Each structure stands twice: as C-alpha cells, then as structure tokens.
Length: 169
Image (cartoon, rainbow, N blue to C red; front, side, top):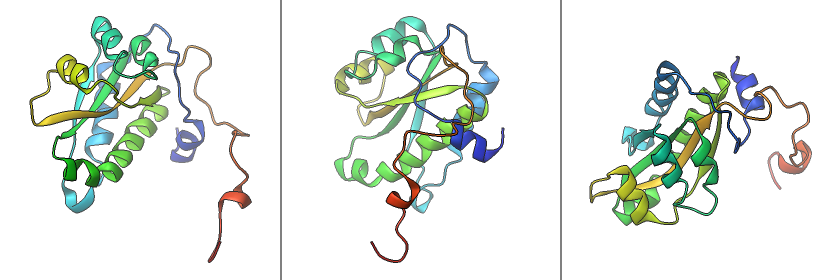
C-alpha cells in the first residue's frame, strides 16, 4: 500500500475477525512507533504489546469505550512517566507515535482503534507497570470483521473548504 492509500484507508475499527496478526507484522507496527520523531528526541514512551486473550478481555474494562480491546488480535499500551509536567509535554509526541502505529497497521491491512484509560490502577496492575509509569492510551489491532481496509472515496468529514483556511480565517 502507498502512504496515501494507508491514510485514506485508515478508520477506527472496533470489531475484529478472529485471526491473529503475525509477530513480524506486529514488530513492524511497533517499529513504526519506536521510530516516530519526538520533541528534542526524548522518545518519552514505552510500548507494552498484549496478545493474551484473557488479558485483552480484562484490559477492555479500563475504560467505558475500550470494549474493542477484548476482541482485538493485539493491543499496544502506550506508557509514559508519571510526572504531571512530563505527561502534559508528551501529548503531541504520543499522538504522533499513535498515528505512526495506526498508519503502519493500515499499510498491512490491520485495523486499529484508540482508547483512553479510566481505571489507571487496573491498567497499571494488568500491564505490570513500575510505580513511575502509567498507561496513557491503548491502541487495539486486528483484521476488521466487517470489511477489509481500502481507500474511502467519500469519508464522513466536513468539506475541505470548510476546514482549510488560507492566510486568515
């Protein structure tokens, strides 16, 4: 898939086929996250890859909107330091890493969806995080159950000319 095809094919997938993603593909997806640029090259993240079905089902309970994690083939936990100032500064970097992961997945035909964390204590326990780390986001991965990823000709988005302003508002 070409970059533009991956961008136009990527959508939030919340229902996954019962099919594993190969270890090679998962490593490539994680490598995309690892290679993501960050402010001053701080690389403020760690990734925990979860593939165990029972652990995925428990992890799906850390947020009301994380149900898709339970049926995913794998989920990436994006982990950062607990320092409050650090957590504020890394949000843009985490967003870039998340999109790198999601676009790399789309390139391989693997769907993805993000989730926040509501029950931080449960997430920490399930992921075995050290005291100075916390889970910022989850990214579920798997092959879409309904239809494969393909470029979307008419996405449900605001019109280009309504969103893009040139020079001034």
